[in-house]
Image (cartoon, rainbow, N blue to C red; front, side):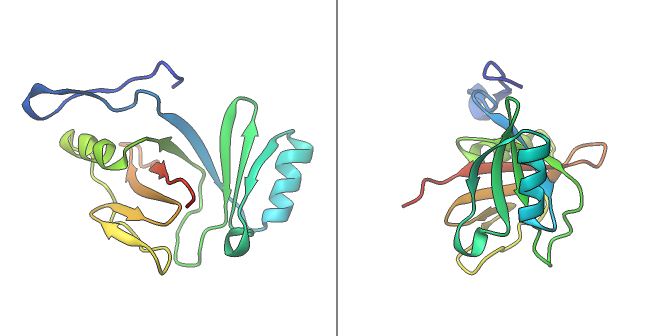
Length: 152
């Protein structure tokens, strides 16, 4: 799905909502050792590091460009069962996107409170840096919906 992708939803009162218009896909790759993973994906594979988490996030998040695609390296918390890479829909309004998919019968997983400042609203977990929601496709593949929040 590129910049021309659109997902038309005929929502409430027949209003047309282009849910995927402007959305991008990101692949998340779970890692055990962030330094080792960054060396591999930048030196061996040729990716470009865009951002590495700071402070408590230094060992748990990095964003890379691999070719024309975004890849996020993540170190799952001990509570998470994240064992496979999965696709993420980057959206501008997570509530609109999630509600549109729910109207089409998509069932979302229960949101998890990942940090002390997290707020949960239905299937959406809101953190200071962004919001996420998870669902599975009919084949059992995990999918994530993500909305970035600008740093204060």
